[in-house]
Every structure is written in structure tokens, then in C-alpha cells.
Length: 255
Ligand SMILES: Nc1ncnc2c1ncn2[C@@H]1O[C@H](COP(=O)(O)OP(=O)(O)OP(=O)(O)O)[C@@H](O)[C@H]1O
Ligand SMILES: [Mg+2]
Image (cartoon, rainbow, N blue to C red; front, side, top):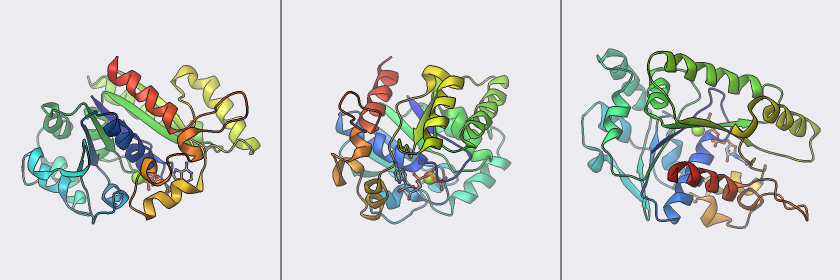
């Protein structure tokens, strides 16, 4: 099953979420593949590796998936990216079947879960990622423009749907959740009012998350008991965290 992590807005937690959930799935013995669709190449850095042209070799040089992937953790492989990913966009623009190149390449892969980390842009690669996906996860910050950003990507998905590509579903993942901020709580309420059960448990704002990438480790390695893994505990209930989000991903995967 293929998940895309998408939001045209930048810095909302797409890469962090993809890395954390991918390693979470791998730790649960699911064979997992992460694919970097962003020329920023942040997935490789997240695992302490150099950026490399994995996606370029896969799409432009026609190399098989098995020779392009880099094993980064037990049960977890990576198709890395770097600035050569820009050439992939050009190749896709010139090719006949430009909208489904990625979905064709990934269709026969033997992974339990494939997680696509999309760039904050609306280009051919972004569209390819959305079309390849069975399920789209939309991470969003909880600021005044959050609902608008989510609506934008849902509009893009609806347009793609009208061209005959359908999704099994989508989920909205509130990130940088700070329950002490009135704006966060208001926006969380608004998201839930508009999108109901499609809103997943939020991931708290947590400085440990920011530090994690700098050490080339995943959150499960660097800080397995951090707030963002466990969620806020207020004596009665947990308000979110990656453990709960992972449980939702597993529900989707096993459905
Ligand atoms: N829950 C969190 N708490 C604190 N910092 C976070 C959290 N999630 C992500 N960050 C930090 O915020 C920054 C942006 O996150 P990330 O790179 O995952 O966003 P992105 O949506 O992938 O960005 P881009 O649009 O540039 O690809 C990173 O420095 C990351 O470490
Ligand atoms: Mg990113």
C-alpha cells in the first residue's frame, strides 16, 4: 500500500512524519520503503546519509528499484533524492505517460508499505506522487491558514480524481500541536468541525523532534519517550503523538 505525505505548504512536518512512521512500521516488522520526491533530499539527511540521486536513477536511467534502494534500518529501505530530482520532473514532462510513471514503477514492489515524501510544490512530480498513492496523509500546522492549505490539496486530489484516479482515503495530521496556545486549539476545533473523523490525533510541538534530524536518527531511536512520540498526558487522556498516529496507519494498512 502506498501512502503520500503531501501539503503544498512548506515546513508542516511532511518529512518528519514520513520518517517517523516509516521507521515505526519497520520496527513492527513491516517491509517498508521510503521514497524522496523532493529535490531538497532531506530523507537521506534524516538517516545521517549524504543526499544521492536515487529517484533520478530509478526514473531517468531506468535502473531497477532493487539496485537503487539503500537499506537504512532493519526492514526499511530508501530511494534517496538530491537536486537531480529536478531532471526527473523534466523527464516526466516529456514522457508520454507522464502522470503514472511513479505508480507504474512502484506497482510491482514487494513492500508492505511505501511512503512517499512530497515536496512543497505543485508540479508533475507532486501529481505523480498523489496518483501513485492509495492513501494521502496531509500534515498541517495549526495556524490561521491551515484549513485553507488542507482545502487546497483536497481540491488538487479532486481534480486528479476527475481524471480517473481514485484514492482509498485521506487523513489530516495536525502537527506542531501546542495545547497552551489559543490559536492552536481554535484551529484544531475548526479542522475537526470541517473534516470530522478524517483528522488524526495531533503530534505535539516538541524540541526533541527538531534535534532528531540533526543526529541522523529517527525519533524512536533518539527520544523514544518524547512528548511527540507519546503525546500529552493530562491525567485523564492522551492528546496525540506518533504512537497513536502509527496505530491509525496500521489500521489503514490492515483494512
Ligand atoms: N512536532 C514537531 N515539533 C517541533 N519541531 C518539528 C516538529 N515536526 C517537525 N519539526 C521540525 O520542523 C522543521 C520542518 O519539518 P519537516 O522538514 O518535517 O517539514 P516539511 O513539511 O517536510 O518541510 P518541506 O515543506 O520543506 O519539505 C524541521 O526542522 C523539523 O525538525
Ligand atoms: Mg520535507
